[in-house]
Image (spheres, rainbow, N blue to C red):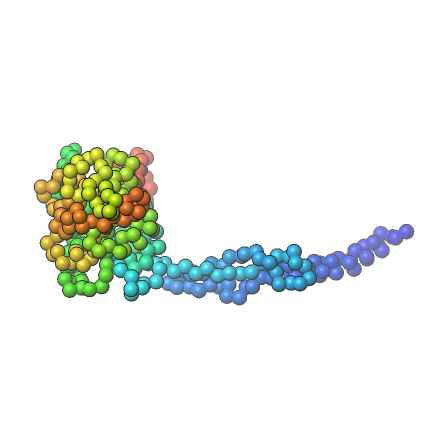
Length: 336
């Protein structure tokens, strides 16, 4: 009969061999390639992510074994510039409010996926604000930062709803002037101009749809005009002949600001085409610009002949900050 010390001696002899066999066995099943695990870095951001995928091994000893191999996924933001692709110039008016940075962050995260994009962000402010300046520098987007304060007599007073003075008009007009001053009437490179407010939601598909715009392209917009969506009416020949809307359907162009894009060459050639500032009823701002550029028959329906919704006129809920008090409970120096 084995004594206690003999059993301990056997265990001490067998244990190292068991561990060695176990490690060797694991190495025949899992092969991990650690080369280059540091990743490529550009501008302080990592452009590589390592992922592990299971696939059948090359081993002939056991066909049931699985081998883990490293694959590399590289994502560049924004996508690389391509000379042959028309540039999309996105014009966004913005103004200071608690949700401004949140709105801009959501929009920027969409624009980062769009190739050949130039963002013209125009502040309703007497100067460039540190918040927006810093935000734009961090995005990595191709951008132009402009500012112009809406004159006091153009602003809507909180106690009086004046539909003749739409928000963002002065800022959009400044961006149009910047494009004309920068590129000039003889500029020949292809491009598209799109008015994208910072509180809307955009499918990536809508940017690819508008890229081929010859004059003015159009598509539906959801949650506009008190409807699930508003849309141009398109006949069997693919021509726009009217508007699917309830609110003033007899407007020359009964369309939401997010529902059309204009060829850059057309913007540059029509030097006097701006949004009207005065004498414009609510819902007529789009018409005030478009009627200087095209007629109804010139419109190019996109999004499957205007049967797909690719833009949503969303609005962020106004935050409830009642606990801040008059002096402010939280640190006002912390950007939100």
